[in-house]
Amino acid sequence: MRCQPRVVTMTERAAADDDVRTDGGTATQRVATDGGSMDEHEHYEAIVVGCGPGGAAAAAALAANDVETLVLERGVDAGSKNVSGGLIYAEESAPYTIDDLFPDFRAEATERPAVEYKMHNCSEEKVATFDLESIHQNGTEWCDAVLRRHMDSWLAEQVHERTRETGGGLLTDVRVNGLLRENGEIVGVTCDELDPITADLIVAADGVNSELGRDAGLMDWDEPDDWFQGVKAVVDMDRETIEERFDLDGADDGAAHLFSGDLFQGVRGGGFLYTNEDSLSIGTVFHLDSIAAERAEPQELLDALLTHPLLDQWFQGEYEELEYSAKLVPDSKKVANPSPHKGRLLLVGDAAGQMQAQGPIIKGMNHAVSAGGLAAEAFQDAKTRGDPSAAGRLYEQKLHDEGVMDQLRPTRYEATSWLSESSVMTSIGSAVMNSPIGRFGVKTFDGLLEKSFNSPFVLGMIPDTKISYVTVPTVIGDVLGEPVSAEHEIEPPDLADRIGDLTYDVGDPHIEVLDNSYEASGTAVTACPVSAEDFGGGCYRSETIESNGDTERVVSLDTQPCVECGTCAVVADTHWEHPAGGKGVEYKQG
Ligand SMILES: Cc1cc2nc3c(=O)[nH]c(=O)nc-3n(C[C@H](O)[C@H](O)[C@H](O)COP(=O)(O)OP(=O)(O)OC[C@H]3O[C@@H](n4cnc5c(N)ncnc54)[C@H](O)[C@@H]3O)c2cc1C
Ligand code: SF4
Image (cartoon, rainbow, N blue to C red; front, top):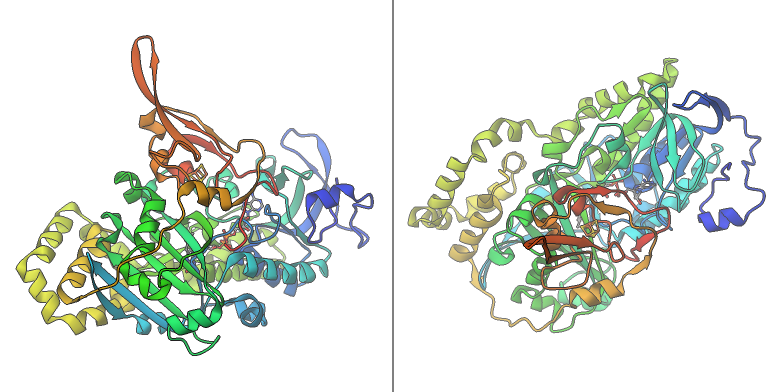
């Protein structure tokens, strides 16, 4: 089948008889498949897989160079599969910012600028608040809160218009399921819904569980400590109430609040609250290995934040959750691939592990944009040199030369983490922090502590240990904090209601449990954000069965309520794929 690229669903496409390219179609070529037979495949100069910020940036920059570009997105709409906190940063040093590529972006696609930026260190009912505006503003041109369904679908419209002018366009409802190879070389992509398509450049901007990155052997999903898990609730609140309760000065003013300390059962990570135009984004981001080790349940950790008395000043007893969502996030310090390309394939954004957690600050969308722009630029440079196959090497060079890799994998962290994350340092540090000396130090160096939280140098080497995420903020809260007098009065929805409120178009099961023993896959029962040990519903359940007189604990999986977060690809023994195009969960907020 040939494509007629435009923002349409596959169902609409199937109904169209004139389903051919309308531009004269000069680009079809004949290539051999791996089996050696010559098949005719539709060919584009560039294919971009995924239309999140990375894919949109790559496609816009390719189109600006008049490169014939086809964008394939598996969601019913770009953004319908995506989740972010999310604050999108435009950094002064970035080679590309989203408003460089899409000048109307801030006016059309964002919520509120994050002007205020505070960190709450919690210890039981005491809270010490630090102002982190200095680190938030450091090197920042602007920073706005976004909701992904709105942002990505706006970007997709722009991308479609621009790529269409090149002879390509954007197709939604198409899941790319693998790489097409010729004599072992990558030459294109294969899809659930379309015949294989070839291209001179393939940009995999397919997000955190990149099936193309895995297929090419550039990323694996093995180690829980390479990932974070993010869980989020979007909460209804009208704009006047937001402005009054957060003391904001109109629509051009917004707030960001971060939370850490003892409120998350000792799990390493923290919480966030961002103001949107007329809703709040509230969520948590934790190290996946810590969630797994503590057998913590993500929705309970989110509820611990939602029901903390500190939040009552904003909720005032009213709480209406619009959407519950979750997704894995790569930890660039561990998994940002320094050489994210193979043959014609270039990985950008989360697919390449380019998500930076700089202490409490999360920067993924901005890096995806930079990488998308650089990938397109590299292809153009390679073409100018008469050697399009050099694009990957040039892209790698640009990631280094533009300082992107140094942000993603700070040399300070790499130089110090072997010591600062060692078990000896962790236990000494923890003992000191909890001792009278440590507490005295916190009291004495109160101002200095707030300053060090605002230092990019210090944040660049913060160890990924309980000391940073739990012990230090808890001691700060206890020693410097003020009691929060409010009672929490809200009751978040339970898991059944959260799952029931989501929209799904269920397809065939897209995840298969390969080893159903509790030992191999039981962590998913607690770590899956739509399952829980005592729930009895959701995706993963555990049960004890008897066979040959022995009892065995096993897990079972029902993918119907899966939110495609990617967690069980890492913590359980599964064969994990995304659902077919247009199938699975559809986020309205994201
Ligand atoms: C809870 C949470 C909070 C976060 N907070 C922030 C924040 O405050 N600031 C920040 O900058 N970042 C934040 N992030 C990280 C940020 O969301 C990601 O780094 C960013 O979205 C990466 O962009 P991307 O374009 O690489 O991938 P994505 O945004 O994930 O886009 C990938 C796209 O590819 C599509 N796709 C995937 N597979 C296929 C396929 N096989 N075929 C076709 N299409 C496919 C998807 O549907 C999707 O549209 C947060 C993440 C989470 C989960
Ligand atoms: S089944 Fe797996 S991918 Fe789906 S929501 Fe649960 S952990 Fe996430």
